[in-house]
Amino acid sequence: MPTFEPYRIKVVEPIPITTRERRERALEEAGYNPFNLDADVVTIDLLSDSGTGALSAEQQAAGLRGDETYAGARSFHRFRDVVADLTGFPHIYPVHQGRAAERVLFGTLLKPGQTVLSNTHFDTTRANVELRGCTAKDLPCAAYRDLDSDAPFKGDIDLEALEAELSGPDDVALVLMTITNNGGGGQPVSMANLRAAAEISRRHGVPFFLDAARFAENAWLVTQREPGYENHTPRQVAEEAFRIADGAVVSLKKDAIVHIGGLLALRDPELAKRCELLVIAGEGFRTYGGLSGRDLEMIAQGLLEVTEPEYLRARAEQTAYLADLAAEAGVDSVRPTGVHALYLNAGRLLPHLPPSRFPGFALATQLYLEGGIRCAELGSLYLGELDEAGGLVKPAPYELVRLAIPRRVYTQSHLEYVGEILAAIAKNPERVRGYRLTEIPPLLRHFNCRLAPVD
Image (tube, rainbow, N blue to C red; front, side, top):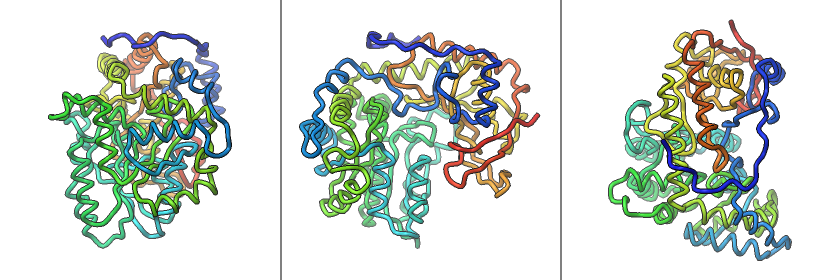
């Protein structure tokens, strides 16, 4: 059983309750893609933890103090001071969200034909690399490949592979470490691995950056799992992690617990000057970057709240509780459990569906049909290689479903409902149908594709 949530509920929103008939109709109209569903037909929304969290009373109060001056607003100075104190970076630019920070950094740093190395690129990061005519290459550690092991830091980068890549013929422009490793099952990266990867990168003269959307959750798991950090606070771990890197791109819609916002933080003054030009051209003046003053104020407050140990403990225990419910239902998940999401092993639950029928997607669809639960597939639909007709050429290594937990939104009883729906599916998994693609966008296909069931 988890501990109780360390907050009181002050404002509530009605949850849509729908019928099976309504959900079937909605899903068909959406081309069987959960991203195309309207919110008013979703009962429990676990599609993403990005921008879906609940604001605190202090964040709301801070928003009322927002200074909407175009340049040099007080709210920017508070934002900058909080970020600088946390990260130690001298050059800080707000942007409207994390992918904008990626676009600015990659547009400044990357040249066509170069390579970016990572423990695992997430979807929009990979797309932004490829849009620059570059290659995004993942180097996950060996432990990542064993979904059932309890290895504590399966989000680490493979250091030997990193050394080999940096010593090889490819022109590597950047090493980007994602913390936590979202594409790798929400697993954390150890401080030892961060330091070693940074040292290897610098020895080869390659910038070392963090994709730090979930920096606080990574820090929490370090305090729980890495020897030598058991007496550190999450804030101390986070500060140390940022100071290892040359810079960071951050989606603040995650661990700043706000609905919009991102930042680009840099150590190199010359790179900062070049990036600033793209921020001004594409996002807004350097002191607001496409955000309002109230957004900047709420971000600053959220960055102070997110490293509180009791908040992080309760959040981690909530996800662990959902993992226990899934296990009781007979549904395996990636071990050990991370913080921001639970990753279900759909391939194991639905062995009657080959990868070409997208078992991860099929489980995600069934969760919606049976319970109005929206979630995301991380399997062959998202990661597999397809031919022009939509046939699967190379499947993903695993067929996973991500149940992303919004921050401070759902209670224990909501998660118990999700567990009940999972149990109902697991009683007779053979009835879950597979799917085939009918429309295939050329980029980020999982956001806009359309599918049809296959009996």
